[in-house]
Length: 317
Image (cartoon, rainbow, N blue to C red):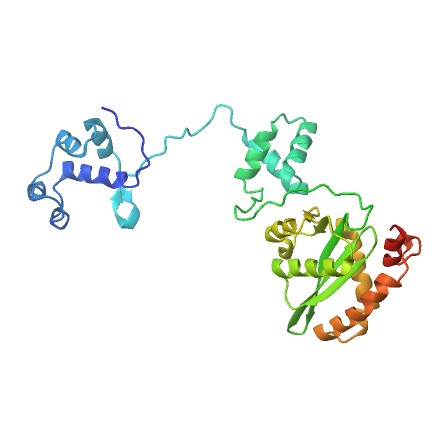
């Protein structure tokens, strides 16, 4: 009879108790918790075979346990720990020199595993890409994605030919003393039509309401909305935009130039409007209400051949 490998956390303690039965009787305090036969176990020890039979193990296993030194385990109990059956070495494992080369190449420029693999090949170090990734993971040099973070599905960037084909959205953050408020901004890439609104907080619910309000003022529908990876434009915002018939895409990580049009509009709004009034939400909203009609009806744009956004919309019918 052979004992199979097990992950039972109580097994080390059971082994130790079997050894105690062979060496000497159980303590009176512990014996009081078992059947009446424990009284006899206190007075004299059991044989190896009897202890093995009582616990259902091979007597050879109990004999091997007798040779091991118990250690302190869970809750301060003396235990004979379960040793892992995993092999200590693999015949094809990487040498220390290759592992060191992978780590040094990663730390040198902090490049991805594919680049590290290619640079090592250029240096004459033969190694597989999977080995590079596995080594970087074991060395803690790869940042793991949080299991709680939801994936953003990649949407292809459309050509902004007609109004609403691609609309960019963003937020401007303001901190005045101990006060914090925000300005939602939105611009259509084809017509350069824009909309803005002050908000005392930002979240997905506020973002969705801002888009709905912009739709009421735009006069055209939105087909694709593009934003950065801010929490106010997360998965809930994406799902509810789809209910309005609007697709949503995120820009590339750390590539703010992908949102270049809205970033430029944010600068224009601040230079021509917000920087000229008192720095508070009420003054900002009043100034925005006066500036946006001028921006959409009168302000000329080089990209529109010196037309205002609404003039361009009328020109294309």
